[in-house]
Image (cartoon, helix red, strand yellow):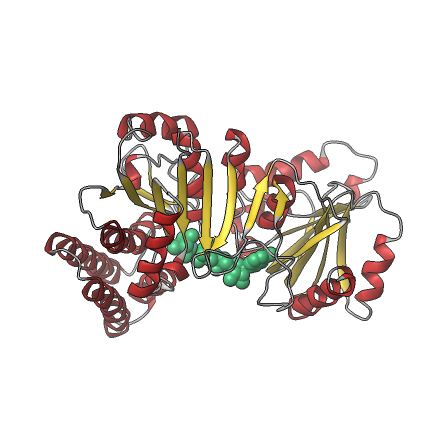
Length: 453
Ligand code: ADP
Ligand code: ASP
Ligand code: MG
């Protein structure tokens, strides 16, 4: 029996009609049965800017953004020579965008629900246009169908970071796509967006289309999820920071998950959870260079280098909660974690001393009034912003004598603010001032990767 394959194409793979046709060919050559797409390049940012200007700016400013989005999508539609029905759907979606922006502009308020509805336009538009591109490549309209992912992607109602309901997704996949393996149809659908139990559109968080792809893969019982992007797989660090970043052929789920969680944008942080649960292989490749090797993410890899890769998370904040009450006390850490849990905020790295606990969070969290209010009941809270969390990802990284000295020698005269080591075999991370982050990555990449070539 043929493998059941889900493929995902990111925004850069949807940049224009040429990129769409190229990606359509890749999806055909690599036998994808379900194709999940992101909004066209830059569109989600434009839609968020539109929502923002509708609240705080003038209608003229909104119109400028609306015109830019309209022009970009009309151009792709005309280059692809979409069918009259597809053109009508595009027109309707652009009209919906404009109406939503008008509503927000009148109210001068954009609820999280409205923001998700506005953002959803991006993926809904690109998926209609991409359906046309895939139909061209297959030279068939009947065998390539557009699918509204909201019929599958059930989530809770936390707009902007909705949590998918795995059981419901799996049931809906069986109901909506009962003959997936046997029928000769390719489905084109949207990443990033979902629907809650009330039927309201939600989003999974920025970059969430990767996560959509593995969730759908899990839901339909796929054998393989392919993530097609603008780089030929996962590299030893972000090639934008180090042009000499080396491609990785095979990486374990655990290492790749650490990379994703600690900032490697190539995968959304939660992408690998469904794949791990359902034991689905994941491949990351370039839609621009599909013949290049790419990276396989597997349960385990034969090579287990001490240092595999470096990741960086920019714009981090450190919260330090200090109280003498912590001395010889119990339950204090539980109270702190409880405050984070109640406010649904995740922590990346944490260190404790006898009277203080420091933790790193995304910059937005440093302004989360409810969380700060709860933490201030437990002690003094100091906030440091404009930090970067730099991580080394590898194997047995917590048990290797001399590693720390190599790291800190290469970071000579970069001020290290907090160090986290020991909890994971796969991760060693520390905080530096944000502007020094890329330099820290370059130096570590030289020490552990380039100088070893
Ligand atoms: P897409 O639009 O396809 O989702 P993204 O921009 O979200 O693409 O992710 C791809 C980008 O991730 C690359 O262009 C690269 O700059 C960045 N990146 C960060 N870390 C890594 C890494 N270790 N390997 C490869 N790419 C990385
Ligand atoms: N379009 C969404 C974003 O830009 C989701 C994605 O691209 O993965 O965040
Ligand atoms: Mg992405």
